[in-house]
Length: 214
Image (tube, rainbow, N blue to C red; front, side, top):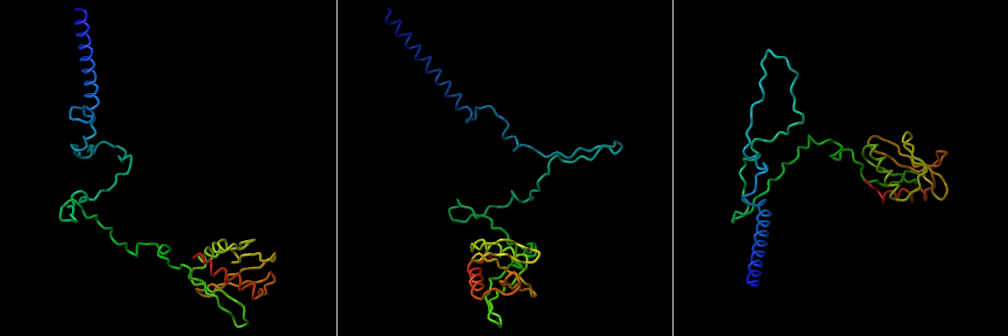
């Protein structure tokens, strides 16, 4: 009798454990099933628009404005028919962006006035000169980057005088940017305004041409 009683108790305990586990599984799965309690996350599907509040004309009120800007959504954004791109009908063609109107793009983004590649020429006396087409401020910026890329020792930058003071072999020279029409001329001079040695100037201007950062 004692053994039968113990057997019944064991069966009851197993049954109780089984019910407990089943209940826990049911509760855990309830969030993903239709038996779960609605949290209102899908209520927007049944939402409807209401007209704005109409205030009687006799009542004076301050202007009612939305707290945050309301984005403008095109009327046909969600009503356009999807275009299938294959015979099976399981792939859609993505809409292509419209081409930009050049008239709506700022000139500085179109590359207008962008510096051209420098051209190394020699004047009538055999001194080297760099010629660069484009806007003077942009040429200055590109020249500044180029000198950094070329590892040229720049001691001073004088934007008012359009001049870079560079140090070559412990000697200071002036890299001057002149302007003739739409062309910038670049020469290497000594502090006394005389032209630098032809070989030294050619070496520096050639280094600028090879490392041009425009």
